[in-house]
Amino acid sequence: MATVVRWIARVLGTLIVLFIVLMAVAEGIPSPSSLTPAERLLFVAVIVMLVGLVSAWKWELAGGLLTICGYALFAVVEQEVLLPWVFLLILLAGVLFLLSWSLQRRSRPAVTK
Image (cartoon, rainbow, N blue to C red; front, side):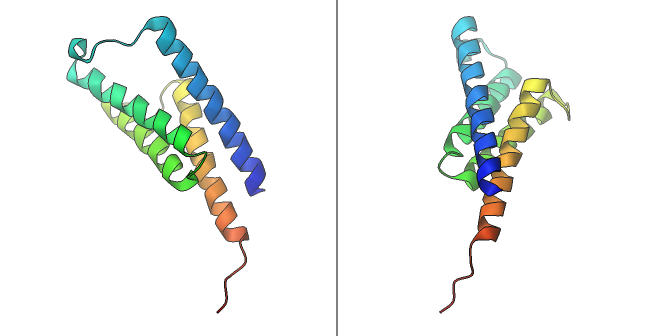
């Protein structure tokens, strides 16, 4: 079960990262000096989410937590609990990485000395 959840999270995370990168290439990345303080925080939150999704391939716990923390920062700055669909998918991917990590830890046999 952990393997299935892990691969669902990886595929979803990869599609999200590709989508956001394509949007950034198409729209262009604004100069930080042209952004308001709130927009800078939103930009940082998106970067944290992307780093979390990429790092979760190797470190599921850390990557899942980073993804969820990025989502939380974005939600706080936007003052919304439920953000648009793409951000909910990012949150879902982060939760799936944490679930995969948890399931994998539970399925390991106990080490005896």
